[in-house]
Image (cartoon, rainbow over all chains, first blue to last red; front, side, top):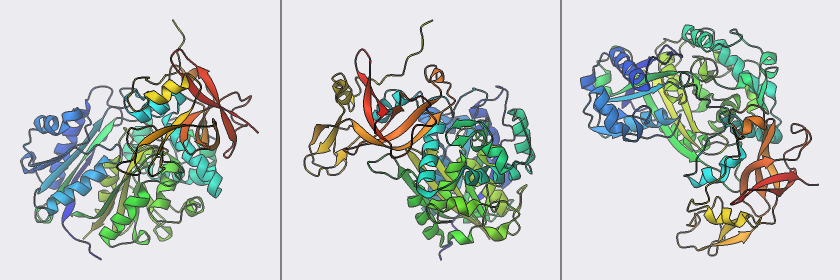
Length: 398
Length: 138
């Protein structure tokens, strides 16, 4: 059991609004969050010597463009852009760079105005394009993003007998947490959710079918938003304002369509063992599971692949409301901020997984798990049902 | 205003142009490595199984099995929004390639498809190429 104390999250900020009314740009959201996260840590812009960016707002040359926009002169730039899991990759790379002595204070930021831009992420029909051979081969079929995930659910149901009622557990637990988060409640109001309250399994399975077998309440929102995370060396962390949240382990992986491939297994099957072995802990020890909830099936699949239960047993494992924050004896609490389903999903949710993990390990969550010691943040980037990335981060408190 | 059309693949993308050229003759072709026999799909210039293999084109019998599917009930795409509900599916061709396509010709799209269902290509003809859609067979 290593549990090295090399790098810690020392500053966090989640942009409170999910509808900026077209009045903010992604760049402005990134900078506003960066300043708040640095303030949270008791640090300033001048302390940042490592810049991590996924290209949101800064484009293909974001390493340069964001440095200039923030007014930074970083010694290390990492522009890994692998979709919603980019921030888990960034956290892993920040720890690596801190361990190598190249970085003392790493800054990760995210900003998006997906809602204001009225981007139909889920049902836009994958405009695709004709550049990458995969696009050329697939765009003609008109598979929406939701149907991409729905085909995972369909196969999971076929192979393992998973039911819509079991998948709905993900949605109800997440909404249960969202109703305790004022920013999430405001988000649902601003995004004109029809019924803002705790939901039942019946509510979910009776909601409108979007792409069989996924219902409306199994799909994440499309919001504006952003956030920032500051990761520092142990030496810097000692003098920060808040208690450090240590990065104990990390894993990265990719998955894409292959002949005879298993649609019900994600890239997490590769990234999770790396992260758990790195951290020297087991899934049974995890208190907080911040798992990318683009859709209900995403979480069910990832819970299995992360090792919380065996492949195919996720449906039975999540049943009975055990994922709620007030049942710590039954297993980890899921997405205690309200998740992408009910709090915040501007397109690349990975940074919020780190932020809420840190809140829990600092006793700052709205759905606080008493004495939470270990959290897992797992990002899924790209699309679960075809090609995607997995970033697993395991976090712990002192 | 002209009616929106199905988005068609580029016939000029380097890796896939031979595949689409063959569809003009209603042939579904795929690649296999002469050296290590790895089946490659989508098409590429190199073998992913070995570093010096030469790929050859082979022709599929046009039949396959539904690996998974979904019925799309909501789309904002200018063409597909007028097609709902329609079936998207991953189909395992008998020779191995797994292709994303539509299953068409169904009276009630949400009731007639299942995983394991046998399907065969029904070509949708366009000016420069044909699109491999699928219909169910017994």
